[in-house]
Length: 381
Image (tube, rainbow, N blue to C red):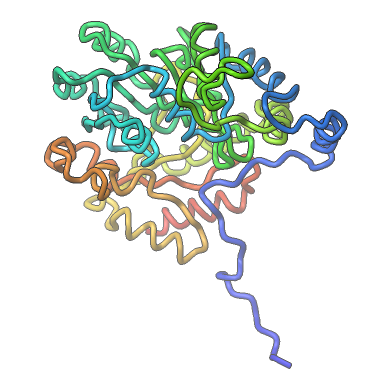
């Protein structure tokens, strides 16, 4: 028999950057029973249709098309814009790699443009400089759920006759007094991955403004079928199944509580970390009600005495697992690094963000003890 070992601090449960929000299992059973009773498990069943209607109401958007994941939604959204093969799409290097992959999968060329220094969103001034005669679209990302300067981007797109597709993976639950940010651009794409504010295990959606575009997108995610025996164009299988949709319907009943909890955590972090030399907080845009999908801080080694990566390793020694979102830049990965626009000297602000940003643990059921453990590590540096 092995001798009993004393527990050390490393035996504590690790704190991830996020955990999926799971409502009580008992509440999910009735949704599953409806699926079992109907025997309709995919292909636009009643749960799927109900979730589309519910999300349109909640998000205040006219049309939404559900997908099995956000990447397939992004791939399809680009296809739906009918951009000529080989066209250039101005986009950000500071995002998850799926943003650029969707461009490449559509046989288009990503052109990286630098970001603005406050939120890490595409800088309209650098967008304008990146446009060439081959440019046909702009694909910005609402980084950390902070809306881009959509008015400036719309002005650029209008002057240069460009399409605008927003990667809105982080935007769920974000509101502002004027026009809802999900209504900006030609299309917006949401992610419902388990790590997001609102999840359907895996999942995603495209928000559009017309019934005709909604019909086109629904066809593209169903192999291009426009009728029982008619295939109009090449599509994919991007359909969300009924179990995913059912979980989304349940999650939607808890979303306001989940958002309130995230905001409370963010308020605690903000109060505790304000004024610490070398620690910056990527704050929400003025007038925006944030959803806090992440809680990003920036680390300046010259003032803190430690680099971002030093602090990252210190967290891991305390069983806390923050994430360096987004590091490294997409432009540094093998499929993209040889593009002229990927040259590091052309992306100085994005490079600085990638070297300094660290996203702290934030999720609805994070405990007070977990929050204080995280704060303590920073204050002890």
